[in-house]
Length: 595
Image 1: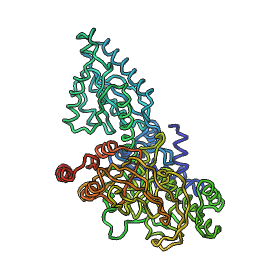
Image 2 (image 1 turned 135 degrees about the horizontal axis):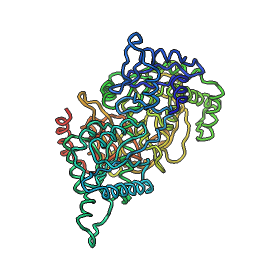
Image 3 (image 1 turned 135 degrees about the vertical axis):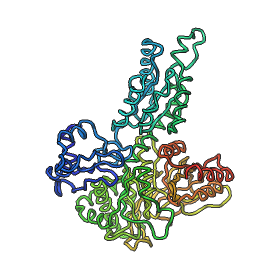
Image 4 (image 1 turned 60 degrees about the horizontal axis):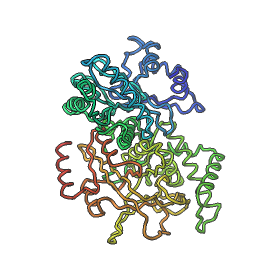
């Protein structure tokens, strides 16, 4: 990273490179008042400002009176070596303050040994290169794989895995045991490795060469042997990893590898996730509560709180010309449903949401936040409950949770990141259970919220309506109204059980409602949980699932289970295989395993 970019980002714009509690507090944008370089030098260089978090701190060089940290050491640590001052697994923070994720890479590490000579190792390297080339050209992977030198010793394994830890662009390592790789060589490296890990159970050749196979071939191509040796030490050490079996050229294998990559991105981005709460938990509501300290320890989430009027100041500062321009964009992109309202009055209500959208987005960008939480009972100087504004922010990639639900807000953000770039994506959103349809053969749950459903899940036209809202004690808010797409999806609920987190994952089938609902002025979805409404609902409630969920058409049950496993938390699945008897037993067993 060029020094001039670092200085522009950190000094010029007061980039917040802290994590957890370690912020260098935002001095606003350069247009407000650029943070002076001398303040930066006093804080960081003179006083060895601690901008790390958890274990990854820029080690305290004592006070200036002891020995000021020389600037060259700071440059060497931060600029020269991309010093890791993020949180948990969080590498040097993404310098792009937009909601888009960085261009991650995955490393391919082949395990072998020097027992069979240099010619064998030459073939190992050659075949590894062909596998990586084939995977990258296969069209199924969302991220590039980078081949690393063959690993044949404890020193090379340890160095490579620590290099992966320290490379901010590396999101995970894929290991392949080409030959028998004695697993004791892997112990220290695996102990120190901190990122997602995949064990690819494959071999170079797809078929046994029956007519020519000899002992030289057997010695050089013994992945079945190497997989078991390496897998044994992973299991003995309790290493969480993804196992993918099959020939590397097989499209299904490649798709599974690509799917795991997206899960790995969810793990990596978790420690970068920062949630801004401008509304606290709804009074007396239990399921949206949670231990923010434990969430920061477990997931790396930084969950901050602001008075809603801090946001209002940003909203009030939005120039009228910007509001007018955004309103015009609304009118071009959405159907306008006046429904008897005066056009000028309707437009003014829409303009309020445009002003909130612009102000809230600037507030989130200036604070480097990726998700926002509101509460209809804590609106301060806002003229309306943010509706259309929040829907548009979710469409841009921000997470959202209502009534103080920061857990769902963070999950919506992560699930949006995990699905970024999927071709023909169907969408990801915050959602809430509302009412059942209990007619036999037509069972399901109507999903919606007062206002805030992401338009990425919409099918057909999207309209703007202005309707009264009994909650919030503010003027009638504008909102986007639509119906959702059909098809399979997943609904997830992250809950705090007091001694642990549990992720509940329900496979659902989204359907069209049987009849129009002309008097319902909100976006809606209608789904039947698997295996059916009765078992799905009973299981969800047995597990303690919330009425809010993070919902996606574009992620699988497997991906969400893998994410929970990588984060070290319990997960339970409700799908076509679920029975109440077995599900209750699983909950009992988990209570012992995760306590």
